[in-house]
Image (cartoon, rainbow, N blue to C red; front, side, top):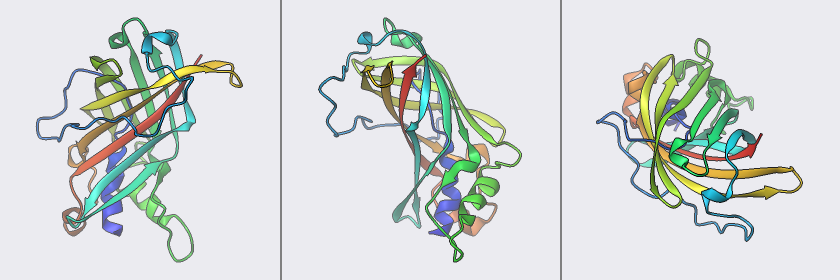
Length: 230
């Protein structure tokens, strides 16, 4: 299990919005809807045109980037990142003209695995050894294009920078709805997204062939985020 987590850190590619597929040919591509089966609130509008256009800021308290990989060809190991920030320029009339820029703190990886002293030493191993957080503290996704595929779905193509390397990533995105939130005094819109990457493209390896051999190169990334109108 320890090995799986180390490799898993790679998953950080996470964040984004919509675009023309540009991921490496060898990488697995999204294939299933990212829509959640959890019911939406009655006041939520699933029509993107109902949301005001303009600049939005990611609400870090209501956002998550979860990564998953397979260990020993058997079980799925999942972890997440705790510190996420970003911005969205949203065009309600033509969502394909929207753009997103998201940053994840590489040292905020959270596996839930504690050592005998109750410390998160394993998280630090992944952050520094696999993700290279000391030399490259930020993981960043910047969208390049958005392709609308349905009333609430789209494909986001962008560039993911990890360990100082930048490669294209394609995300399957779903508009989860929007509404004016009275207590916040702002309009809020939400999205989920999913992608698959190959961690070796970014050199996100543990540096041990035994460890790398027990965890998949393919990492699934699941993103959920709310954005507040500026």
